[in-house]
Image (cartoon, rainbow over all chains, first blue to last red; front, side, top):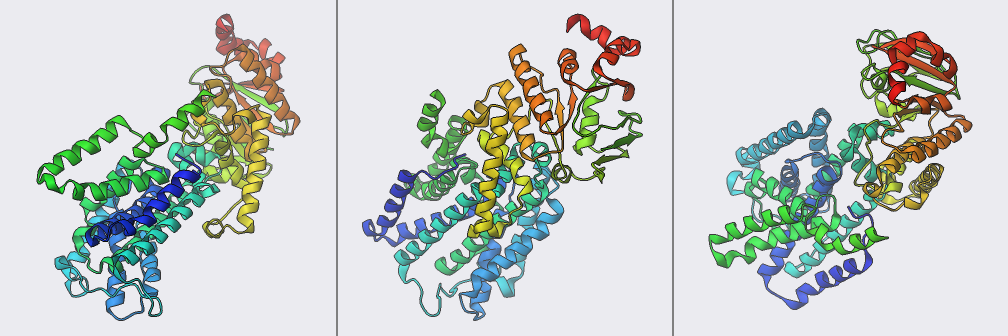
Length: 314
Length: 248
C-alpha cells in the first residue's frame, strides 16, 4: 500500500501518456485508451471503498451509469454542459447516501449482496424507463463537452482532457491517503474494533469512502457520456461491476498505481487479444488467475517488490 | 473517578471505583471475566446494565469511538495493529482523534488541515518515543516482532491522550527483559498522571507495579486491596494465586 507517489515512475508514465497521440493517430486506439482512463477513475473510486476501507461494493458500475445517464439526459434536454458534472455528482451523492446510510453497518457478504441488489435496481430502471433512458438501445448523439462554447475536438483532444482529469483524480486520492481520513479508512479495514477504540468513527468513515467512491464513478460517467456520446445499459451492468472489481484485484487492492495498471490492462487486453477469436477469453481468464495466484498483491506488488525487499534488509 | 457496573451474566454486579492516577490491576483465573470487563468499559461490547463514568462523564453504552475521544484508550489481548499502515501511521490514527478534519479541509489542503496533520505528527512521534519505537516509525507495522507490536498498541493508545488506559495482558508472550521494559513504561505513564487499569495473568508483574489489586472470579469481585493484602488473602490464594504461583 504505497504512501507516496514515487517521482520517477510517475514522471515517466506521464510523459508516455502525453506522447501517445503523437505516436498513433489511430482513432480506435485513442478511443480505447479514453475508455481505459475512464475505467481507471472508476476503479480509483472503488479503491476508496474496497481497497482502503475494506467494504465490498458491487454497486460501483451503477454509480458510473447514474453519472452517465444524468449527464446524457440533462445535456439532451438542453442544459449547458457545465452543469452536468455537478448534476451527476449530486445524483450519485444522494444515491450513495440512500444506499450507504442504512447498509454501512452490514458487513462482508451482506453488504456485497445489498450492493448487487442496488446495481440491479438501477439497471432495471434504466432498461424500463424507456421514454427517458432509451431503454436497451440507450441514448445517442449526446452533446459533447463544451464550457461556454469551448470544447475538445476529436479523440486526441478528448484524450488529453481525460488524462488531465485522471491526474487530478490520482492527486486527490493520494492526498486523501496521506490524511487522517485515509489512515482512518485503512484502519477500518484492518481492524474495525481497534479503529473504533482509537477514536475513529468507522460508520462515518465507511460512508465517506462510499460517497467519495461514488463521486469518482459519477464524474467518470459524466465524461463517458459526453466524450463517447453514446451510452447503453450494457456499459453499466452487473458484469461491468465484477469487471471493475477484477481490475482492482488484479492491479492491487489499496494501491493507486495498482488501480491504473489493473484498469488499463484489463481494458486493453480483450481488444489486444481479439485476433485469437474465441480463444481470447481462455487466455484472458488464465492471465487473471495467474496474477491472483502468483502475485496476490496485484500487478502493483510486482512493480514494488524490489524496493520493498531492499527496505526489509536494513 | 467512578465506574460502576451491574447485572451482567459474565460480570455479576462488579463495582470498581478507581482513583485517578493509580495503577489498578485486575487479576483472576481464566474465564473469570477480566476481558469481558475491559470490553464493557471500552464499549467494544456493551454490558446489559450499569453505569460507567470517567471523571464524571457517563460513557455507558456510548460507541467506542466516543468513549475513546472522552479519554479512555485500550490495548488488546490478541494484538490488533493496522497491518497495512506504517508504525507511525498506526499511532497517527489515534492521534487524530482530537483533531477533527472535514473532507473539504483535506481536499483544498487548507491551513486547518496542514496544522492538524503537523499536530498529529508531533503527538504520534512523542507516543512512539515514550515506548521506545521511534526508530521504527517508517517501517511497516507487520515488520515489528511480537513484543514490539504490543508496545505499538500502547503507543497508539497513548496518542489519543487518554485519562484512563486499559492494558489487556500487555506482557503476554513477552520474555523477562521485555516485561521489565514494559514495567518501566507503565511506571512512566503513571508518573504522567494517566490512570492505568491492568488486566494481567503474570501475577509477579502485577504485584510489583500496582497500587491496588482487584481479584475477580466468576464475574464477581472476590477481593480488593494493596498487592501485599491480596497475597495474604486466603480467599484469593484459594481461587487463584495458590494455583498459579506454583507454575508462575
